[in-house]
Length: 183
Image (tube, rainbow, N blue to C red; front, side):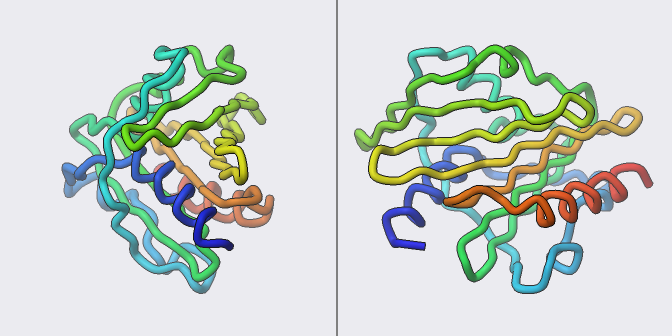
């Protein structure tokens, strides 16, 4: 992965992460590095300011899922040597995907002036999953976002890569997240 692609991936996820407010009970439902394929390690994304969008309802829906801390919740993030980032959030409550099914494409402008066009392509309904592509012009990043529910708990899994997560990685990570959420 080029340094520029790496920085774009980091800015995408960093815009998707606030300081966590850990819930000890919900921590038991979080993925650990041992649950992921070999080569993933714990990761703390740097914080950045949120971007502005020409379709604020779409950016806000993503914010509610990935960025906004909604107590009680627990969070974990991991990174592999190739730069793939996995973020896992577990909350109590309902899964609110808002208008994401109808977002299509929208623009983002970051505080540093970087711009991107973000596209949401829904992949499945149960569990709800979408491929979210952030096109920065010379490069793009892909976020496979999956929302899983079990009883009164919700898990949000983000897998951010420059070229799209392999189905085997998505199946492994989402499968383990689902199993942990259900126990």
